[in-house]
Amino acid sequence: MIYTKQQMVGSYMIGADVNLSVIGLFGLVESAITEGMGVLKIDGLTIKREYNAFWVFTKNRIKIFGKAPWGEVLTVQSFISNVSIAKLDVDTVLKKSDGSVIAYSRCEMCPLDAATGRIKRTSAVGVNETIVAEKPLMNIAFEKFDDGDLPLVDSVTVRSTNVDYSNHCNNVEYLRFILNTYTVAELINKPIKEIEVNYVNQSYEGDTLSVYKTTGDNRDLLSLKKNDQTVIKCVISH
Image 1 (cartoon, helix red, strand yellow):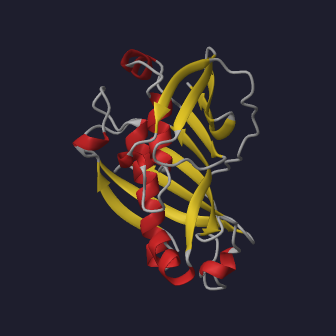
Image 2: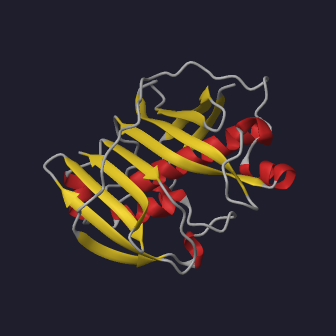
């Protein structure tokens, strides 16, 4: 099943250049994934109620091909592209009215038992034989990268508004912490073309996260750590 909706780029989704921001893009992807899974009755609220489990994003890689200005109406499509014993890959594509693709995402996610925090089988949370993978529209592979020995650039505290219904920091909020290490001028003059986030561990309200970053000409590497334990690592290409 391919979940499709029309989405206008609202004022709360844009950055200083009056185009869809990276934060706004990640939010649209998250919404499309959860709404599509809701149609399949395997969304987070459903599996929490019926199986005492919740989904966590483990990886998300997004390629950005173009801009979408405030007021632009986009076609957003989201679909499961791979099903395994413990994980799903969900692809999301955003298109302009002329059919051109402005962004493509592949998100890897797995279900966790709410009582134990352990990974559950996807079949244990309603992913049955009726849920089949669709053919991907693009080839996207997740990258392996090391986050060791990066310089410390910031420190942030997870606050109440960063926390979602699973009582951990929401995946989009981590991206906010990451992007706040850039200036407005940097985000405008060196636009992000690709970003991959690996969600390694969870963090909770009150946790202090140290932000580490190294910057190259066209590629930056960042990580967020809690007491020297990696929570998030991220690679950004310009």
